[in-house]
Length: 321
Image (cartoon, rainbow, N blue to C red; front, side):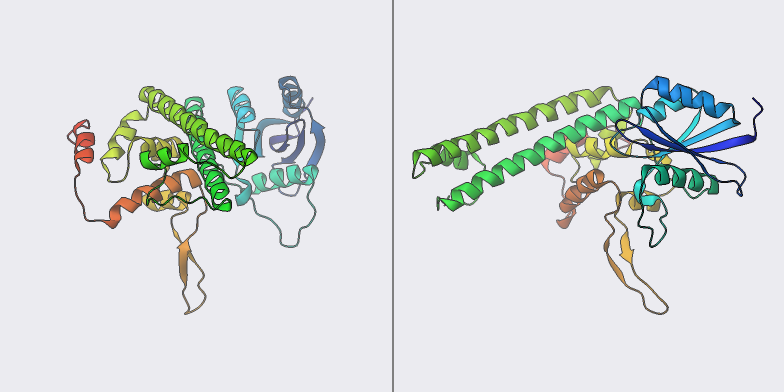
């Protein structure tokens, strides 16, 4: 069949069971065409590719980042096709547009890709994504542990059982918890289950952290992980979180771009002679931002090389120290 266009911009609205497809010819005046939904199996994708290749020599695919991950991106690029993944928050939206359907979303993606109004996000490699998943799994375990602790403390507060010590979850507090007796047997059962949940979540967090520390040793970015530990407030876990979220730092052209990606630049609302800057935007990668903010707390105090930091520095190359 004769090809009627040199390039087709293909918008995909990807879901678990279906993909809505639309394409826009490179001619700006041409209408965007909806092809309707297709399946998500590889044979369905191959059939779509053959159908579109009969219409144009070059295909450029785009879809929104979401719960379906980067499998489709890797499959298309593995076939030598151009594909971009875009952040939903960065897609231009018309004011007052209240209608949202899969068909319209696919057509919007195709139209905006043709006009050059979409910006592709960074897609990590398979190894980088695997380590990021492990890092986020460890973070999930930490958040579950915190919730379990809060649930236990709230239960004890409702029973007016109060710990008189200052710090909690240290050895003294754990000994006190082991001796707590609730007013009734049913409440004692609840308390024991809450306490057991804390112990199990603690063990889970430790396992995940150990596996993360072991897995990262063979990573291509491990030298960078080691190097940034020379900074105060950055230990191994924080360094791993930061690098698994950021990936290759050379993709950032300057520090300002990196800070913008992390949401650490100040918000601003200025007009005319009036200028107002607020707190940080918090737009971007929350995992990496939290690791940096937690590490920054060390800079509240005067610089001092503690014994713990000195031991950490001794393992680093001289040029890093």
